[in-house]
Image (cartoon, rainbow, N blue to C red):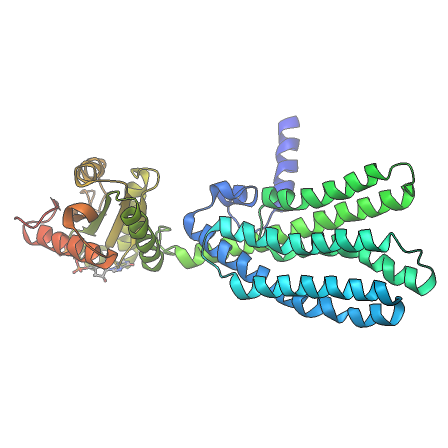
Length: 387
Ligand SMILES: Nc1nc2c(ncn2[C@@H]2O[C@H](COP(=O)(O)OP(=O)(O)OP(=O)(O)O)[C@@H](O)[C@H]2O)c(=O)[nH]1
């Protein structure tokens, strides 16, 4: 009875989670640690682009308020505020001009940190300046507006597709700073208004976090659709090319081996011809399931064409790649509708061994070897040009 109730409550709760995600992807909302490289790169690009948009808006809006300050405040005050606004505006403009997306998350975090640091410094500086003046009436009302900046910053978090952990890490310094400033001025603190403002900041953080998580969920679903082959669920050719390009650069830089295997299922056309297209589809799914179950962590399988696949194996030399193929062929590639085993012809190429200068040549080599495996009788691996 209790377990049934717990089950219902759990079901209801998970029903609240973004419906576009599957169970495994829900963990991706918590921490970036679980994200695939392709998602991280796209997210990093999106974050930097949003930072630049935000910075552009603030570069334009920040100096405009000087007109109001000029009309309301006495001379030395409006001039000092205007100078600070111009400095902040220039800093925002520099961020727009010089920060470009690189695909690296560290760069994206740095861009966000700079974006939030500019108004924080501005806030602290203007606060120091304004406390020296005894403002009343209209002047006090306009001066109080400066205290709203932390609210704007925390609300600004909502435009970024961040995980729960990242949202907390970015919001925490601002909330802590607010709390510390309250503790420092403890004796003279107007308690109810401080507590009210702090509660409001926490609420805004919660809403921004929800907004960020919803964006992230939507992005995860879109990236999945863009990078996965709809039939087999493995990576599409387009994302395979992207990963291969990236892995080629990484392995060249670190002088590490990079092996790829080009796999083509044998006599697959006969399955379609004899048992129909749907049976053919099931064979494809069975073969990719079997390969995926035998992959090493860090390896990546992409569907290159109809019944052609490319397996990307970073940090793997020729000998290790041959071993991997032996293991894979032993595990098999699933069964044909008549119960006989599916076999594959495989060509292997390795960056160092083949002295290839770009990833396309590496694929060409593996493809040619796969073709020779077909010609010399199918169901075999070819890994050099000697046969
Ligand atoms: N069911 C199904 N068939 C596909 C799909 N994509 C490609 N094919 C079929 O795969 C077959 C490939 O046939 P071939 O290139 O002649 O190769 P094969 O029969 O495997 O022969 P070998 O490669 O020489 O061993 C074609 O009949 C395509 O129509 C797909 O998504 N589903």
